[in-house]
Image (cartoon, rainbow over the protein chains, first blue to last red):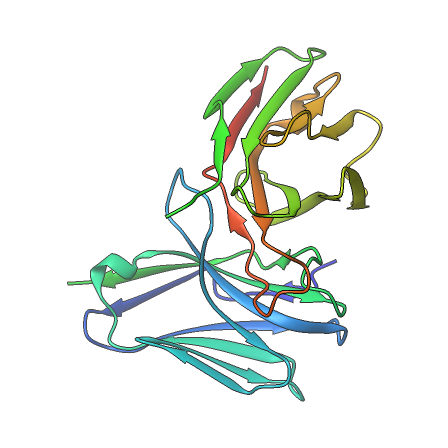
Amino acid sequence: DQQVKQNSPSLSVQEGRISILNCDYTNSMFDYFLWYKKYPAEGPTFLISISSIKDKNEDGRFTVFLNKSAKHLSLHIVPSQPGDSAVYFCAASAGQGGSEKLVFGKGTKLTVNP
Amino acid sequence: EPEVTQTPSHQVTQMGQEVILRCVPISNHLYFYWYRQILGQKVEFLVSFYNNEISEKSEIFDDQFSVERPDGSNFTLKIRSTKLEDSAMYFCASIVDGAAQSYEQYFGPGTRLTVT
């Protein structure tokens, strides 16, 4: 039951270029979406989030876009840096409260080459 | 910056043994979670805990699992009789307040459980 899908297991980009990570979801009850970054042997680290009432949220080099009609979101990293190399997880939650469980995608491994 | 801590970082146990994984959530957080990630798979929700009781649990969280907040700081996950398929990274997470404007869950570094 893959409610959150990240169809690209890996992505490789050059330093300075844009990285675009994609995520699709099937559950229309999801109303909050998050991106987490994970290094090996560490826990997921929160990166950026977006509520379903918005279509864009920006934080420095990171921008998340949400297309509710397509049930699709994407994370843009501009410019990409070698330190951005990690596994990126898309996650979603449903319900009115912020305490709802997170449903994760399988992750996309981003490699930024110098 | 406050962070979620977990101990031990790695636990090796024999099948059938009981294990207790420990977490110290961020001090002013009210909601607590356990997730796990089997190698090569996605992070999966196990259980959420609020006000000293389970809020929600997944199908994975069967009678072999239990959670407890024995004091004001620790949050534990107990597996009564471990199985080989319990081998995974177990992550604890917490959130400050369910009604807060931001819903980011903060994750600990994880405990790698290896069942032999």
